[in-house]
Amino acid sequence: MLTEFSSLSPEEQELLKNAPALITILVGGADDDLSEEELGKALKTVRIRAYNEEYELQFFYQRLEAEYDDQVAAIAQLLPPEPEERLEILSQRLAKVNAVLAKLSTETAYAFYQDLRTFATTVARAEGGFLRWITIGPKEAKVVDLPMIEPIAEPE
Image 1 (cartoon, rainbow, N blue to C red):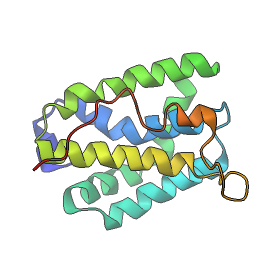
Image 2 (cartoon, rainbow, N blue to C red; image 1 turned 90 degrees about the vertical axis):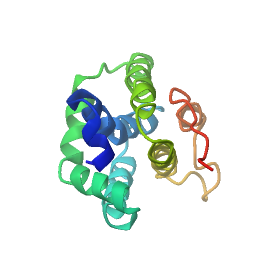
Image 3 (cartoon, rainbow, N blue to C red; image 1 turned 45 degrees about the vertical axis):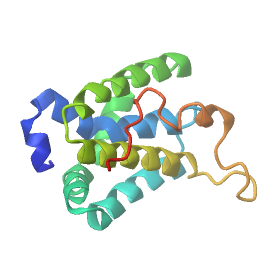
Image 4 (cartoon, one colour; image 1 turned 120 degrees about the horizontal axis):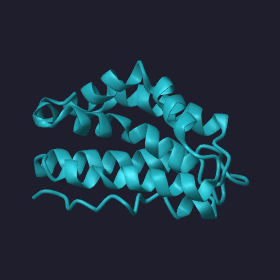
């Protein structure tokens, strides 16, 4: 975890660690079809970020990488099969990230928030659309901007 994350409770650290998996299921399953392409792209993104991010976020993804697939499977298994119910539960869990981000420095909170948003967009674009047009479907478009997580202004 990030050095700054060590001041968070174990539950808060776990929530941040689960956020990418929650986003994968939320965005990828928005159309009620969490595809292999979306799962594969999410895992590939975690692996890339484990080696290409700023030091603190890179360390976060390095810790996440080894258990990411298991996290997604474990979370997905506990969710209801109905898309609307699943969306509501995932949105509620991700909304809890707001309180945790408020405990972090503005710089770290902003970086983490932006990272989650780009992660969501990457998952949403995984299937490619028709001839690379309309890569984000209408159901994914409703959640890809993570409206349940309050925007964090860029630090000065």
